[in-house]
Image (cartoon, rainbow, N blue to C red; front, top):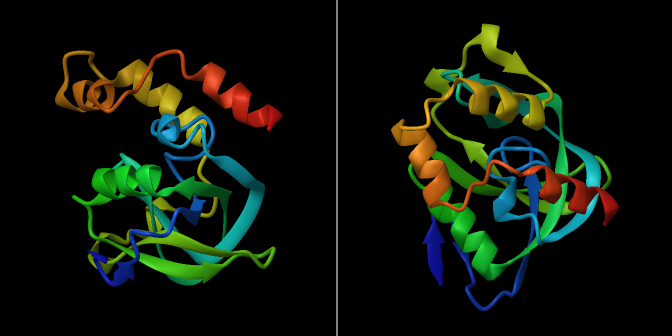
Length: 166
């Protein structure tokens, strides 16, 4: 058993059903981490509140808005990689039920002090946000180098189209 913030996860479990609402969505900056996973539901939603955190990425809180996202079935290796990526932020993995009745795990942000009503959204356009990030982020920056170290590519379009056909 590994402790993931507030949840114990059995490492013998081979698959996890994960709700993604931000940069892991198709077209998003980190989608390449799950691009070979099964896209179970391309359009679904959970209840919560979503905000853009410091103009960098969306964070999901408990709440009552309908938050649009995608549902993936990921293996343990992919799940662990996502956890490693997200482990620096103040997330807890929680179990939710989507609008379509699928029981999923989702990353829920814990630090409510970052909520700013001006940055509140209900849908995150992952591809648009990523395109803007690619245009504006200096190639020598730490952020861009981190992206490349984690397997990020500039030709992410093929992975987006690949998942569209599944």
